[in-house]
Length: 294
Image (cartoon, rainbow, N blue to C red; front, side):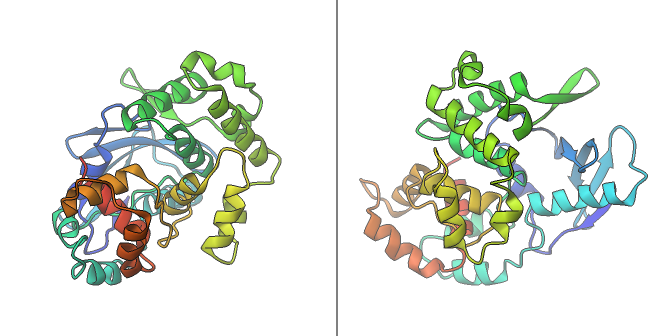
């Protein structure tokens, strides 16, 4: 299958982001090819993605091509959402190219999209796992979690992992997660989120149906274990609110400190002043600033 890409999409820029940590367990990368499992709603399909010289994403089914159009459409939807392909970035680039802080990151990584986490439970788990630890250990913790509780598809003696479902995790007790070195608090948070999703109180559809960003943020913050940082991370990478802004993010602070040549992290007031020029595009500004760090 072929997916036409936006004219300003750059596959190498996105591969650069995806390859930032070798301990990623949800997909494999090799020489410009991405191999991962995609949930079609009915079953799981192992696919390989790469871009051709005609600015198209080639989607190859490794096992067998689904015969049902609904399954093929589900794969296309996932890829489009994963890479935010339906977003018109012209207004963002127009703004960023005259912004003193964003101008260089945008020039260096032009064509990068906010690579998403389409599954709400996975996005929330990743947000909770990443709290108050460095990125390297967050990836280690995610791999342990996925390999212990997830399932996989095997191809050529290699396992391609499927993130655990909220239904699976809702049945666990916090003690079930202690041997993967997850703190008791984080275990409680993740199981609590799984239970909310399992009983229908929390869903991606309900959050997307809310009138505005603030309503969705307030709804998320009510959940135990989710503060403003995690809420905005999920709003940015799963719910696709381009105004989401994880203002307390350490990586964001370090990037701004580096680009501005500061001997300290920027203050809250400085962050608000800088971001006032990014109205409607705070998520993309943050994503490009993160990219500066690796």
